[in-house]
Length: 306
Image 1 (cartoon, rainbow, N blue to C red):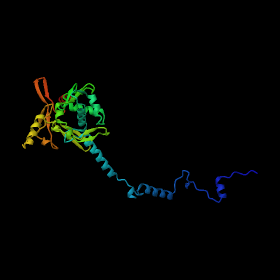
Image 2 (spheres, one colour):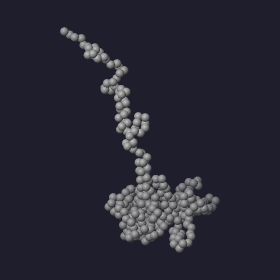
Image 3 (cartoon, one colour):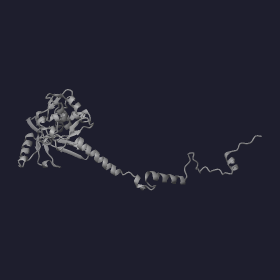
Image 4 (cartoon, one colour):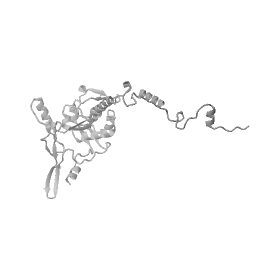
């Protein structure tokens, strides 16, 4: 005998169960959860995150204080950038990369000139931030013509022309640098970044190098800008200080120019110096620029006039 096939509703009625309505999706096969299940999930989420369903804090032991982490990490990063990268040290007037360059040249010192490329490679034992930063810093030191003797095309501060490639130019420590910057017996030594070498914490400089060279640096939450001064005036000021006499120092710029230091304020914050180019009129059609303001190149000066 052939029996008719029964639909799902008829089988449910025979089994004594009432079929579920279409709008009551309580099954586990992708249907929406019930209100009781939703409440249970919310309670579990509150236990895991430490927050209540209303956005308040639940278990305080599991809440991470972002403010404390931010303060700690920010101060660590800021102090690293200030001390290790951007700002010169008061004791010797040098940034870390400058100090490492001079120390590296002291290691290589034999009285002869060294290729700048070779000096850069030796400095990388102490300064792990790439050859470009070392090369740029070495050129800046050499252009000031005090602690380095230079051979080759080291660029031109007046025109803004860049130095030649490191493999084409040479350098060595000047006689002044060897006499005034180094003394291993009075130097505090630190391990280099990889622990393979020793480098000076600061150099025992016998001369106010920071004032003579000037410095400019931007760090995290801190910036410094010190203008250069005249070498002879610094010597006279140091002698006057040792003898207890009063003295006054004003900036002196290597490129010359006419300076108004009325608002200099002894170099304190808020002080300013106005420097103008020294221009001579040769005839009705010709102006001769004899001296440039500090930090201004001939190209930028011509553009400002035109």
